Image 1 (cartoon, rainbow, N blue to C red):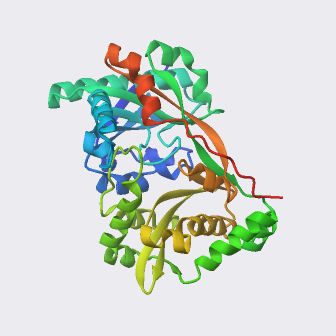
Image 2: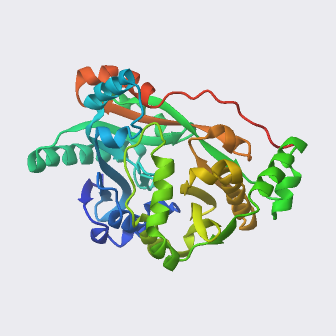
Image 3: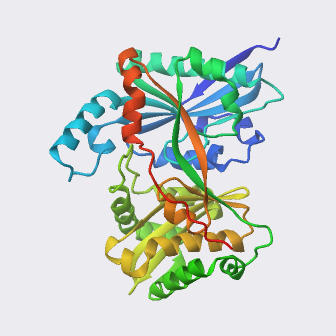
Length: 386
């Protein structure tokens, strides 16, 4: 039997040439994206890259991120009542510190694993991944005196074959937790233009579309160039922070230069659209073209203009329009704001993670804590089409 072994890389430039040659179409696993991420990573996230080899052949890869969690990053809303603040402080004592994430914590979805199923089995691949996790854990302890507190495999759809490997997760004491769904809009092949989309709406939702467009009339929209991203870097970052700081839980703050560097690496596969009122940037959204899918990425807006001009809803419509006009099969709207995303056509797809705390007692209460940090949101799914 061919011997399997692993190599752990700390820098993208160290990766073997065979990395990009692997038959995965996921842009999030390619070196261009990983390089941009490495150069613009939030200060509390360090990425490492796993290569699984069969003899000399690269047969599997994984992205493993070390995330350093701190109270001020996890909970950024400072307007909480005293009891809420106290409970958050208690929770942060358990979850703060070093977390190892198998995948990319900065984006919804499974963008951390790939192996050649004709070369090795899933079981063999996960066993090699387990060796890598142990190696990184020991290294952190010995070289930096830091302890890994949490381990998480993130974001798998219900149909993902990883779920067939329960003996692996059980033996490693990782348990399965359902997280907020990923909102996915599968676009009918017959649609070629915005009119096809709006014609499919019921009267109620067509009226809603017209109303949003009317409110957005004063907005000048344009795609931002690499030069724009450089010039408008501070404004874009502030608009992103406006939205990010209102999230219930955060695990990072983007680096100011993130979008500029991503544009430099991904070129035309990374799109940034700016919304201007009287030549002032009041909102933006970003898209990543990932093979046949359009991945919505970060966005931001000035809350003063949000309601009056329906900025967020107009962005969702503009994302749909871009996807239809560019013959994309699906828009990955990601999680959060499920109700409004369902109103533009997205459907919820259940997602799961596997996780554990390295402390036995903390691990026993982790599910309760996770439910607090990631509560099941009650929302009403909208059905906008006839």
